[in-house]
Image 1 (cartoon, helix red, strand yellow):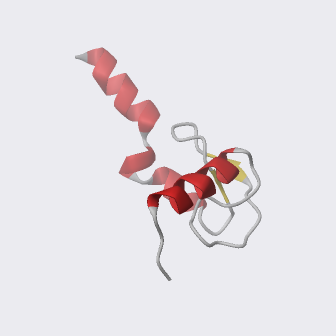
Image 2 (cartoon, rainbow, N blue to C red):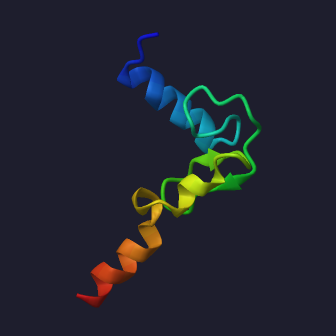
Image 3 (tube, rainbow, N blue to C red):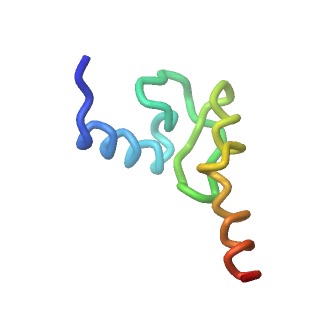
Length: 66
């Protein structure tokens, strides 16, 4: 299966609306929203929010401290 940028952007847009999980091709219902990227994630993928890429609030606090 070939995935292009348009596919990823369309998936993310649906995730931000709460229609689907932010993980590409995940069929699970989203249950939690990331405060940094605003994507929604299902229970199985909620751990993604704890990764460094989704620590926007931490990064913003560090930038303000500089």
